[in-house]
Length: 209
Image (cartoon, rainbow, N blue to C red; front, side):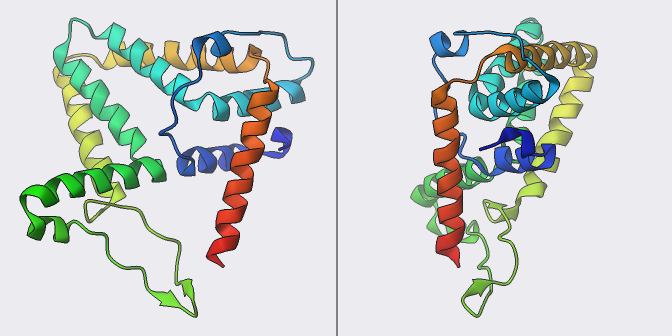
């Protein structure tokens, strides 16, 4: 994949649709080799490649930095977890897996309630879905849970007086992420992994036709 031709919108869509259940890359690989990019185009390509390949590492690093900033603020820790969960809900794979596990757990206690948590069926016209498949969590549209968790987390941020702290934590986390993604040299494993996931996406789209 030529990351120089990938736009920011394409990268965001890929991060939203890709599976985040894969474990983070080993620390020996994460902190392996750093070099200066030779040009702005090389830096642009490297930044996108590393953000996609080390996405789980960067997410964990952001959570850890925010957690360290709120060791003495229990409410802020809860707010950070809810914020991370609301962001994770934006990923299709995570939202689907979360909904499936919750529904399966509820089915053990109340099959009738679990039946109501199933997503609505997507109408099919001439063998194809009539529109892009919407993501549901426990029978509700995804945006419903994102809004609820975001509102609760913002309220907890305000009550715990941790808004300024979270701004600093996010700034430090984003700076650390950008610096690492800018200077970490993409290895052959990252490129092969990208090609493999790109093939899977193409094959999935082909099989849905």
